[in-house]
Length: 155
Image 1 (cartoon, one colour):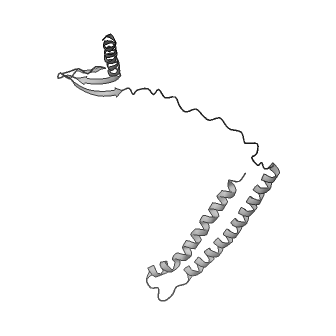
Image 2 (tube, rainbow, N blue to C red):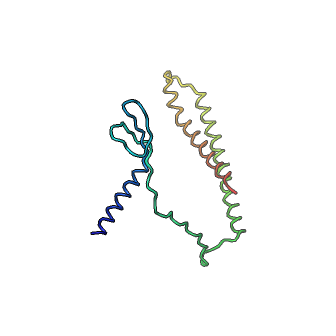
Image 3 (spheres, rainbow, N blue to C red):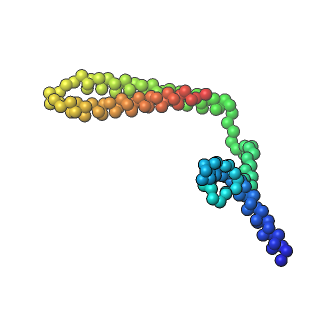
């Protein structure tokens, strides 16, 4: 019977300790404010802060960097430099071609903007006719921007 009494006494003490972690702001009928860790009957009390339980779990351990396996194929620095140069050259060729396409698309749009057809008294018809040309210019502008960004990110 003694172990049961000891365990119930420990539970009561732990419950009291857990309650002590809460901070209350209590006001009585006379308007006096009291800050306490015990909720007082007959007073209007609100919880100001309550301590959260502390985690007992250990953070995950960082995995050590594993070395590259011996059988893993390696590339010499000269081969990598050659590949990087080829990639840069290809990107530059694509950028040049895309800039030429952008110039052509802008010329076509300018030509279409200068044309006024007699059946287009409604301005919306003009806008509808120009829409595909404007979209083509925007597409080539986005492509040029993306290629320039890719070239700038090269080492």
